[in-house]
Length: 333
Image 1 (cartoon, rainbow, N blue to C red):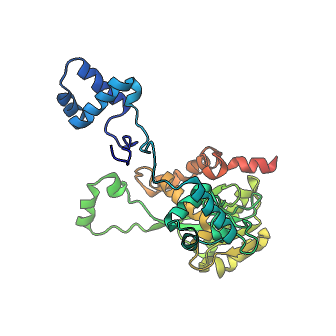
Image 2 (tube, rainbow, N blue to C red):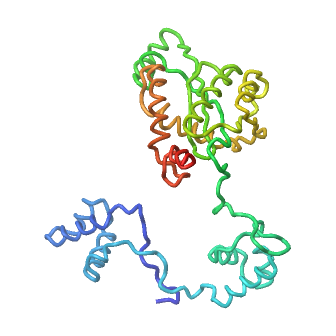
Image 3 (tube, one colour):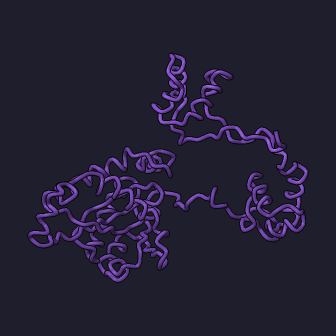
């Protein structure tokens, strides 16, 4: 054998046979069936079949389990002394892999892997004078979040097409021919106004016929009542720069009655209102396109029950697997 040690069989989660299927292969061959015929039945090559048979004879049932592809020995691996040299140079000089490569003689890509394996922060996370970590990296950074329910309410509008009577082509493919024969059927759009509390992710939504300033103002008033009733009195409201929010006197009047400050997202920075944007996606997946509705009225009627499920039962990953209402209850407590 050459100095390069052979690798073990790779750990392959896309393998055609599971350990149970491999044991089935062994049983059939043990019952007298030819290995080549069994391999064809199970959809694998004869080489793979003989490999599993050999491993079963040598190791028993444990030989049918996938192994790591990591080699038993790595003669070309960077020595611990070189690793320490690289880390010491990084700590002392606070330079990138390219500059450290000149100092240590270790390739820059190897230096990058050494620093990553050590779990050290990147240079932009460090104070350039003291070297202390002053910024969180992307992997450990938490999204911003206000401290209490009601501190910030994200408001947005999502436009979705109305459903023609009968459900349209999604519910009945035959309706496509009828539309072509009678002319294009214009059904218009519904405007889904949404409000999401920044701290608790408590959500409120309505399907409305437009997105004018008066409609947005009336929606905000009803959303504020809903939030206050659930322990999230609105103190700030964040919207994009649509004229219905920025130039509507009715919308500003509602803000004044609430005593809430109006925050606007920076142009071309939709992620600043990201909680509303993400809720829009969840709303589409969980309600708007979840099933085949036969009419717009049926879809609208399903919005309220879905919101109750979202707020009271749906597990939210950003809340530690708890539904949004639990954070409002904690604040009340």
